[in-house]
Amino acid sequence: MRSVRTLILTVSALVPAWLPLATASAARAEPPTLVEKLNAYVGCINRLSERAYDSRERYVSWVGKKGPTGKERIIYGTYTIYDTSDCKSSVEKANTLEPRDAALEAAASAYVTAVVALEPLLKEADDYYTQEDYKDDKMAKGKAMHPRLVAAWDTFASADQKLRAGIDEIQDKMAAERLTEIERSEGRNARYHVEALMMHAKRVMRTQSAERPELAGMTAAVGEYDEIVKATEAFAEANREQKIGSMFVSSAKSFLVTAKQLMRRIRDKVPYSSGEKMILNSGGGAWMVEGSPARMMRDYNELVTSYNRGASF
Image 1 (cartoon, rainbow, N blue to C red):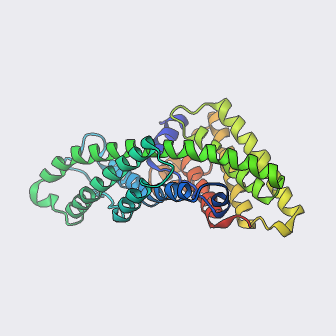
Image 2 (image 1 turned 45 degrees about the vertical axis):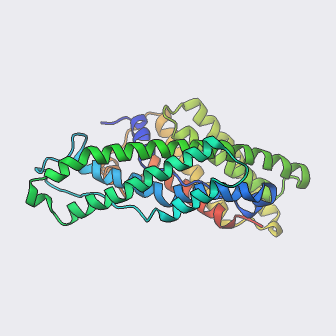
């Protein structure tokens, strides 16, 4: 039976969370070209990364580590990913925008190279398994494709993580500076509470999905996030004219509940039941298990979606 800690590493590696786009409020505080640059990179990740990781998860679910043999009881194949041409063109344009950042631009280019290479390979694999061509060649092509698929996914995952890290660093700095400026010029208004909440939510995600999650740091991050959620909800109720969206607050609270559930599961060493493990291993339905990394990813993604749609103003 896998430990909770191992499961966190596995799921977080396979199912990435969305990154928040820079909203209109951010655009007022940052150079428009920087906002455009980051949004191009974020757009690629949000459109392509989850599908790329899902394709690997589906493939590994029936192949395992050694690759296909032709003797499998069930052969699922894999998933294709969406068209990568828009990502490629948007990154090429973004890489020319100011402010220039050689490391970030190189990471974005490496991401494009990796995901563009993955696209035709996944189509080739999907055609092979969907058409059941393995019944004609005794899985010969499936065996030959296996190391190519693994290498392509590994290259993509590395590029994805490096680009995310670069975006995170800049977005964290932007968020802290923006929050300081909002408080200085406007006070702790609706915009302040929304931006502070998102900044703390991201910190929670980072502690939960770290390579080696650490309970004390996780507990502290969840506690800080809990306080800002309470403050935001209280502010929204007391200042209805500032119109912090009810759906945003609801998403924020749902994410808090799941973060606490996962923290407690790890803290109290609560194992998953046999039924929960079946759901977790089923792939797409893993988010239904309360207090699971997959549920937390789902709830964070919904919070980011609510923020990107306009949490306020």
